[in-house]
Image (cartoon, rainbow, N blue to C red; front, side, top):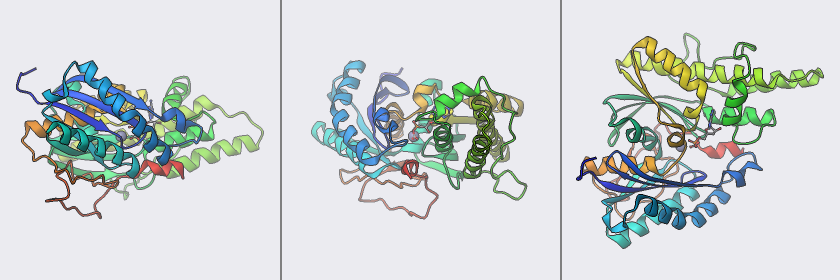
Length: 369
Ligand code: KG4
Ligand code: ZN
């Protein structure tokens, strides 16, 4: 690690994880996360007001824990980065306010960054600098997108996105139908290992010849799986939970990997990165590896702990902003719950404008509906 690499603290509060990471260039020094997921579990989804209150309580202790783990003093920092959006408005506000307070009190530059670009940039902490260009498949409870980036601090181009549910949302909803608890991804992943992925032919959304090549749809699949389960129950038959989990999971990861590899081939990009909570899925990782190898594409997937929401990813992007001399945000920076994916970096109220008609991500608030 070079001595002149930037030392950056990153704060993430877009959903239910209060994350604080400290990064030196592309080296991870601390990754402290306090999650309120258990509090939301009994509601079957994230409750925004509860998330905001939990962030408020966890913020300062999590920052202090990260500083202790990294063994640094705040005065050594070269910048403070924070997720400015997209995400839950009230939750984002807690992180943005904390980041501004620390930046102001310490006299350090502030970088408001995009949550989605951070999910991509985090891979630098594990596999070194991102190749340019990189295709990224971002799949989580709030987003499912294919993004092409030639410079993660300034250029993120949406290739496609979900037109309805996010991939993780589909996992969570099917888990709820099967009474498996929340969040659904990890438990479906585990049960699917003992099931037959070919047992039930569930639909592959938007996979027809005339369908958009890079967009996703999981709502039809979700309905098909729920109906199949209901029919079994109505007939008084036992639901083969492992086979349902495996067949549902296969339908999701088949479409995700096929479209991601196709986008790489069409654009002549030979690196695919997969990030977001669903990237922790073991079948998604295995099938992506298999299909990328066949297509001559190098696959980069961070370890599961870096795929789910965390502060290290924000610090990683902040460090890249400093390294590339991007203009810091001003202290007027505000949280933007529907920040477009095309804005990796938010300069603040002055000198910033963007068009809200851009493709933007489905909020995790949908989980609660
Ligand atoms: O990135 P993340 O922590 O939060 C955001 O949504 O931003 O992702 C959480 C989502 C949840 O929907 C969860 O069910 C899903 O990621 N997930 C998984 C797995 N682990 C987490 N989905 C499938 N397989 C997994 N192993
Ligand atoms: Zn996320």
